[in-house]
Length: 85
Image (cartoon, rainbow, N blue to C red; front, side):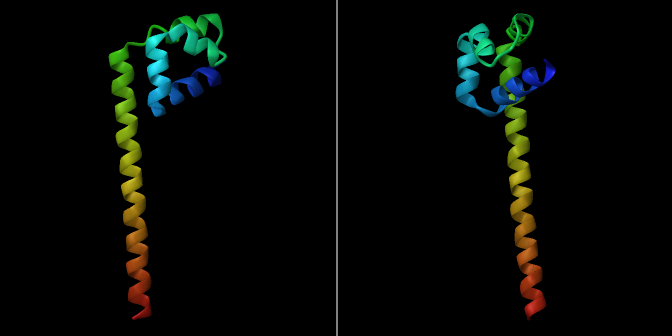
């Protein structure tokens, strides 16, 4: 089922420990996630280099979103202070 694969990949991208387990034994990690035999075989073909690259990309995107939220909060606070004064 595609949803299972997408959820499994999202876990691999977001969780370094899960990613390490997968890289150590891809088939076992995929089976533990409830993937079918065919899905396990397919995700096992993922290159460790490409997995690390994708995970890094998602990490950077999450950091950018955090920074934008913090800046947004600061701007809101400054507007609030300006309105009070």
